[in-house]
Length: 97
Image 1: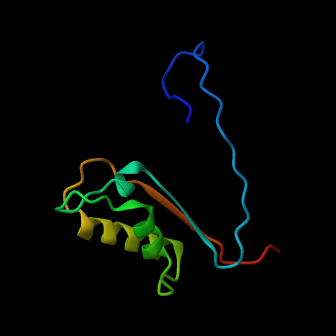
Image 2: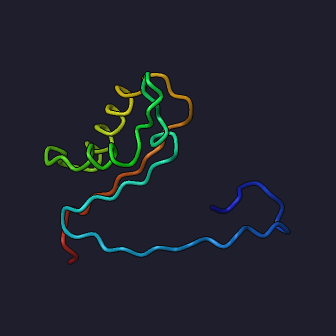
Image 3: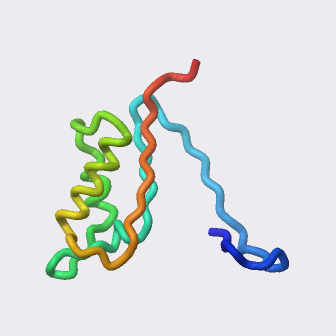
C-alpha cells in the first residue's frame, strides 16, 4: 500500500483496487500477515484455510463476535505472537433501503 510519513516528492506505487458486493449475511475479513503467519509449536502457519474455517461457522452472529472468535482461535493456536495481529471484519446485516 501507500507509504506513510515520507516527503511529498516520493510517489507511492500504484495501488490495485478491488470491488465486491456483500449479500445479506455475508462476511468479509481483512487480516495482516501476523494472523496468517502465526505458528504453532511445530512451526506450522495458521494460514488462510484456518481463517476461513474459523469464520465459516454458523455460530458467529455478528462481525464483532467473528473478530473475537478469530483472535481467540489464533491466540490458542499460537500463544506467543511474533508479529502484530490485526484484523477487520465486516458483515452485511441489512438489505439496502
